[in-house]
Image 1 (cartoon, rainbow, N blue to C red):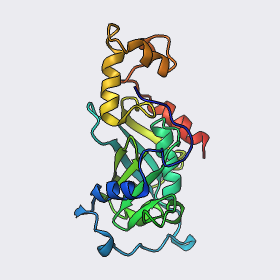
Image 2 (image 1 turned 90 degrees about the vertical axis):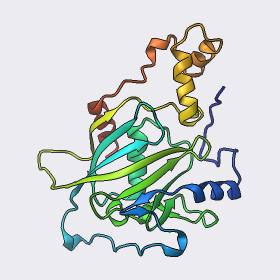
Image 3 (image 1 turned 45 degrees about the horizontal axis):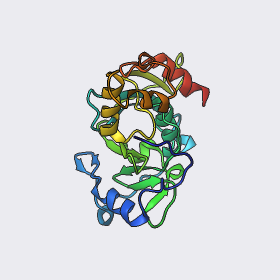
Length: 236
């Protein structure tokens, strides 16, 4: 049965070498193919200058890899949002709790909490439009190196800012996000099955773990774009 873990540590599950090996296996697609290896990293473009004017709006689709049925969020964010800020927005959009490490894998390197051993640069030092400068570009975002929640981030559109719209916002999505520490996508699938079966021997234990009185309080199909937007804009 999954255990709750708290804090921002390395989760007590993988040492540095193991995490590094795990990240080596990630091959996030970039524009026109796989993200280059560390020996062939593209040069990070310069950041937007004030003289360049306001950044446009990126429409991005953030999809949880391996989830069946699919779980995803479509967000509209300023193109010059830092990867550190984007991390916060994704956490809010998926109802994660920011209790574990994360990393963005891009054609320009890995960005997260700075870690020389893992080759991670500071996520605050790069913006979304720097690492994904065009429609069709993709990133990989991994949260919690134990449960290994992998997300594909696709730049779908570059939009003009609308004066009547407040950003960031969520314009579409599908299904509730899994709860923290439930064992990754496979553990989540098992959790959903157990909650749907009142006769399962672990049914009561899983309800207790989720602090629920009844399984009907947990709806994996639930999604409300307006509610997500309200949460995103509370953190502006």
